[in-house]
Image 1: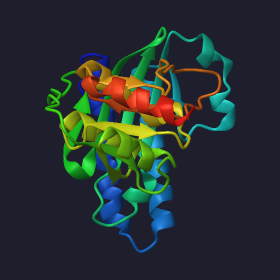
Image 2: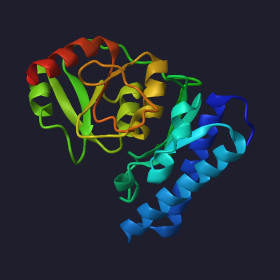
Image 3: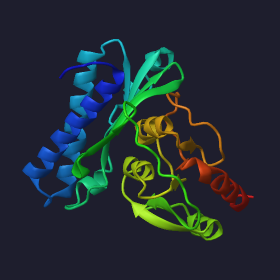
Length: 254
């Protein structure tokens, strides 16, 4: 692996983890979804942790698959640089034959900011990254599309879609949903059912680099590398739509 900078490293790590996950899918098949999910989570996590320990030994790492003790490590709170990774975002979709809406997330937080990130979509054959962020499609008015969870969309989303003049599009992992905003498949993503920092750090890094809006659903700033990694809600959208969506969410929560 040739390392040029943190942006390139994020891409290399996400791509290689994704390649390994595709190989696991091919090798194990889909008869035992639980075993497939467990092996995917395990293998991708071990690869990312070992690679970062070797290539960035002075940096801390926060992974979805970290133990409770690792998440509470006080060194992470005082560190200048923390890699926030989700080795397999969308384990349900990964274990379902034919589904491509799962991802690998690799992001770097440095001194309060997300400074690099990559979202590999291995089954789609593409990776979105801060090194060369996608160009956002301009919004031309009219109805638009909001990506929501396949299994647990926020209860208020039907009302929000009606008020905003939007259609709801169920998509699997958070990374796949935010990527869909960036590639023009939808214009927004809203979630309020509970998430963690690793669910959004890498896709938000790419979204911000691309010029998209990314915030909490009340408009507050998304903050990372907190003692408690819970980050329960998020809005990512084309910048032109953010005021409409934030106002609609605010009205529905009065």
